[in-house]
Length: 177
Image (cartoon, rainbow, N blue to C red; front, side, top):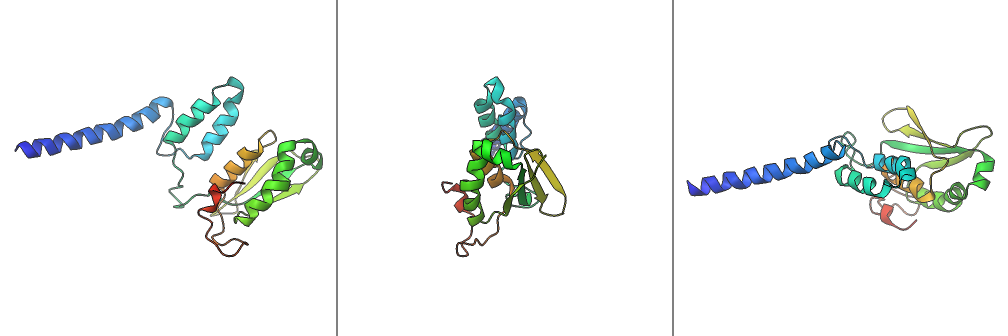
């Protein structure tokens, strides 16, 4: 009888601890059952002017899930197109750096991404969803180079074989870009 009570107490403490971690996320304003980590990047961008961005992003990342439960893997989009003006590619250092230095490396890692200069447009990422031809538009004019790379790494599905020789790309993302 004493062993049964101990087992029940251990299970109860474990259950309460698990509930408490979810409650903390909920108390912070995050729903860990649906929060994707790519949203933490967008949250940080929106909060940078208030100066609380780093702390809130850290809390967000403690509650988010890197895996898209529907797809069973990272990446809700299969391709991305950065649409911007030719002038922005020259004047915006982060866009220029992304297009000239980061984009070729991302392509080598298996990401399907292009840059399209057009006149009279807002700078956006045009993201095509995996399971349909539906697209989402994300305004990225003031984004930093590393934020673009991080967002693509979290949201864009990669080909499992890259142009660099058929290596599985699952571990390449952590490589320095």
